[in-house]
Length: 385
Image (cartoon, rainbow, N blue to C red):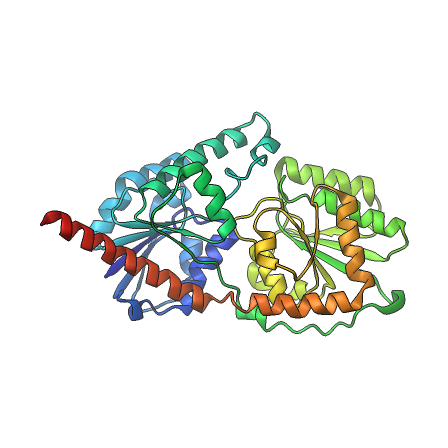
């Protein structure tokens, strides 16, 4: 078989890590694939490994406006897939408009589906974009010969919108060995020897609630608990403005809240190694990749109880309501004050994280795509008789 991969709009950190992970760790030839052709933008293609079976294509449309990207995907990509004699297409983004058959499509976006989240954007272009995106994703998932979801939660919520899908598989992402092998050299800050270092890794967005975390940290400091917060990921737009506003209110002199710009994933282990507690305050995720990386890194975790987070973290963290600063503060306080609780959560989280490997993800992905191709081929041969 020859496999085509449409990653032309795979811009998120999770989408890029996924493609790099399965092509680096996996062996598609063991599943019957003699060639894999990837269509994407130059930055992602350069990050992919060089393999004798891997062919990289960089269409000019990837640097053009979105309408040009969609036009290329709809009109040109099917022709290029046939020219390369591809037997099946793997769309790594359910927002695809490519109508090549057969295909497997993966869902990595939840924002247009999560109840209540779209309302945060008011009547804006962002809201209209999410509504249109949901329509396109529903259509592509229904049209796909196989669908891949990352969590049970995402599969259940999205199928309430697009309808039941007959052929699907649950294949969570993996986590890199650089997170699993991370060693913490810092001892816990006993008796106020230094501040407790809190870390939250995410770009600024309405559903990430960084300003609520800042208010929670301010509350803890008002109680005499010496904590500082590092926000990693940067941001722009109204959510970033809201974050900056809260920093100016809660910490006008810059004493305990620091925000960095975007940090490449390869550099994230350094921040995890220097933290004492990890915070994950998102209310909308398909699969919380940075949460799993923190689990693998061995940090005690205070986590939002929304979305798929309880499915992933299970009983290995302290949960809170991400829109209530007092709830966030209570979860952090429990971790600070109870050393046995921290120890339990760290060991349990690392055990849970051990199941998320790129080798496992790659094997399950290649197996499902190959099975989908053979199933479609068998159905077409049966219909032709």
